[in-house]
Length: 385
Image (tube, rainbow, N blue to C red):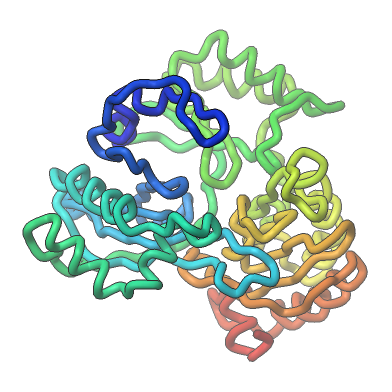
């Protein structure tokens, strides 16, 4: 998919000055033509039961369907996106709709049909409404499916059954079907750097010298040391311990399920802190979690410095979106599986306000939850949101 949808000509190599093209060529891009796409377009693939890339946040998503360990095809979902603008009700987060099933050999053909619909009908007048989620909502999902069927020349079959258990990562060692090993390393908010008693950058540099596999960034800002040969497994373990970066078993489920965007002072769109602040907030929330026997409970908590949603804050069971320095909107009730958005609970909260709101809620959750019930489901069942 990635190779197929890369530019195949030099049509993008243009220089414009005062609304006139002063350098370039007359080549036409075979897929994007002379129109290109109105805005970015995200494609994701996920294998149940782990929704570890939040597939419903993608413009176009493919959910692996397998039977008896063999790939039979993909469920297709379209129209996801997290971005929004405060005060502009024409912008909003949206989860993708699952619209059908395709065999493996149709994935490129279907992708091209979906992308060309967005190429031809996407909003080019208002950048804030230029993602495919708005194209679908403005014209209707039935219209979109009919247009897709027409371009394909056949009707999409109904989606196949599937289920997700979580949208988090599984940490530690796992053995792959290819016989090699994969180590998922928790990297708080995705920041690779050396700190006192935690030299992550140095550790990864040393591992890279002996590692014969690959490194993979996860959709939850963590790192997989992938395709590790059995002979190198202990060497890598020893290096992780030497630099004190192996997964810390004392981390709470809340911290291991946290994610933040870079926000201030790196991002010019941010209204508030996120990456640098969330770990400090979790320190205080951890005390509440431990006091209520919830230290191992995996509650997804996401924080962003603005509503553009780069850390998918609207898919957190606890979501925090910056309004100004030191103030956040608190959202509650997303699904632990990533298939339900959270809901605004309170606006413009300080740290003290956030702790005051969540403390009794988490205490009650520990006492009143149903067996196996997640926090996001609990707040809906109790009518909190």
